[in-house]
Image 1 (tube, one colour):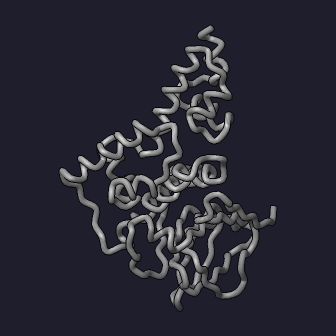
Image 2: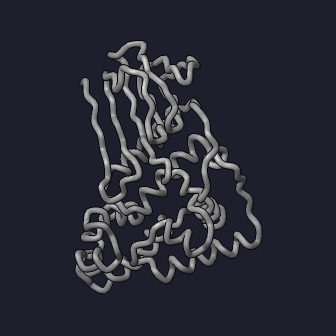
Length: 266
């Protein structure tokens, strides 16, 4: 199927996804205002980037800086399938709260498990989930593929102050888990960058701030269901985007839908 599709989230307009199947998305040399992450699912292509010739193949990830001139020439258009993730430059720099070091293009080879994992995360970006979940996914994709801190004059380290800060953030989420919490909120509260917050939380609690918030919401919802509370009321009171989002998360944690759990307790 020859097609090009775009996805944008009006409520979180820091990224855009482009899916191309057996199509050349641009036949001219060009540059993007955004940083570009490409995932090649099928086929191969010759990419000319700043007068340097590079070959990208199936299971390759490509990272191109904003403003870098490049063009893409598929070896066989009938065997060419990829997705592009465009990221606003100011958002990318907000991850670390500093300007990033310039670069041209980097390529990473992946195995099938890597591709499947990244594809699932890109799919989740197109679902009805919260800003903090989507922002966490974007940062996770970048760090998994290209190790974000390498693009900044910064190195991550952990000391006692950082550990104290991670518990401070955890307590903030404990006290506000039903509210809308963004990484920007946590950054302002703790004084750490968004990237630093996610790294610290993963190292100390083996999860992300958003996943921890979801866990608190789900456990609270479970107790409310035991009391016979209405599912739509619980969805609203716990801060889920909608009932389908609540149902999906509840089933992921407990292997059963909220409705079935409610019926089993009555």
